[in-house]
Length: 458
Image (cartoon, rainbow, N blue to C red):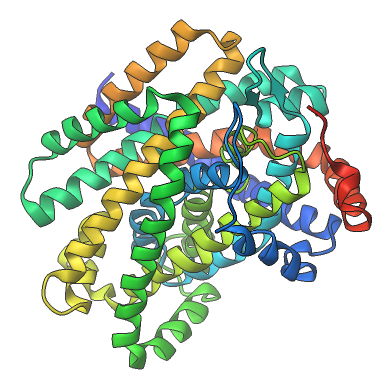
């Protein structure tokens, strides 16, 4: 089967998945859950701020599992990746400045979606004979919603998605931006990254968690600081940028044939698609990391889900989006993805520091995402194989081989396949969230009355 046929098949599936039905299901689930918990992300903002930002520097003890902060670091490692840089850029190039608004819109409700996912992953997780925790959508679909068959479907899709969102797109963007800035052939980057990722993931979730705990905060702060410096140097442009974002978000200017060609619809499509690629709210991926923590309180771990979406979209993605919109004229030069945003950083920052800083950030983002998603594949495949060690070993070998393949792949096809896998993976998870929404609402209500009442027993 040649690439043209693959593109055609993927295009048809992608158009259906990211059509009106999927957009309604994705955002509608977040809106529905938000109403069920009485706009928890706003009404209890002090609670989740104190329970996340307020605990970042608190020391936690670990057992056979990872600490709550290692869990969120692992989740952020997979969440904060090329979607925050390349994904946002491609969304704005394809969907206009208004796509950033629709990312914010989806993320506001996605905060509760992810909160619900994490809550349920703790509530319905399992423990093996060694005391290690395993959980995620496949477990709460099976144990909570009594839909074991749907849990199997999710696990299959999740295992496949690991090679798209968690592998091909990450190494592809990384290799291209390294090549652009340092003239290093993409295959060389692929080989080196494969070796280093292999060293990390061979140690299992404990080593992944320890790695993420140290690397993720540094990489996020580095990117945010560099981005804020660029924005500060261009403060005079900010008012017009925000005006453009909101005007295009609701513009009925026609950019193609038919209703689906209107700016507002194109912006929503790319904003929602790249938004879920970035913050992963509704996909069901992050709960697999959170379930591995030694936290016994589903609500308190769920607060980190809100934190993740806030950091990912409202901080990191916003910085990328604003800088990309400052340099929309680069579209006329035929630039897109990593080359576009790299050139934008170079233009906005004196000397080559901007583009080099972007290259370093993208390298770190991509690398940590590769490590984080490798764990999701282990959990998903483990659910299907009853945690067979041989299957886990073979999966890791294949995952490493795909890194090399992704380093020399064509950009657009890689991103389109990742979009399709994201949508397919999200569907069973969102169905499970809707079915289990009464559990989310009840557990939240009980916690607010008595925080100790929802503690889980090992």
